[in-house]
Image (cartoon, rainbow, N blue to C red):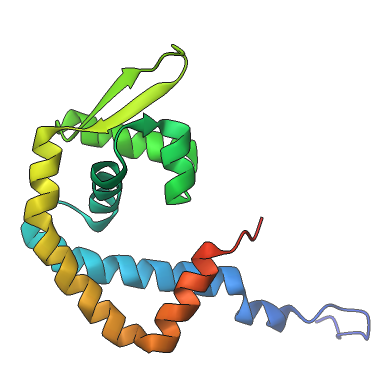
Length: 146
C-alpha cells in the first residue's frame, strides 16, 4: 500500500462537496413534492413547467429553459412527454427554427387540479426548511453562479 506523502491531495475534502449536497437536497425536495402530488396526476417537475407556462404565457423553448434553469435538451425531453399528453403545444415561431411552447386548456385544468396538492407540499417543505433555509434556497437560486 502506498504511503501518503505531503504532496498528496486531501481527497476527504470531496466528502463536503457542495455539488453533491445540492443534488441530494434537490432530489429529497423533489421526492417530497412528488409524494404530495401523487393524487394530482402530475409530477412535481411537470407541474413546475406547466405552472410557469400558465403564469407567463407562450414562450420560446430557450427562454423557458433559462427560466427553469434547465438544459434545453433535458427540457425538450420533458416537453415531448407533456405534448404527448396534450398538456402543452409546441409550434414554430416567427423564426421557423424557434419552437414556441404554450400550455393547452387541458394543461391549465391540470394545474388548477394540482394546485392544492402542490400547495400542501409547499407548506410542508417550507416548515421543514424554516425561514433561514427558505431564504438560503431563494438566495442560491437567484445568484448567477456561472
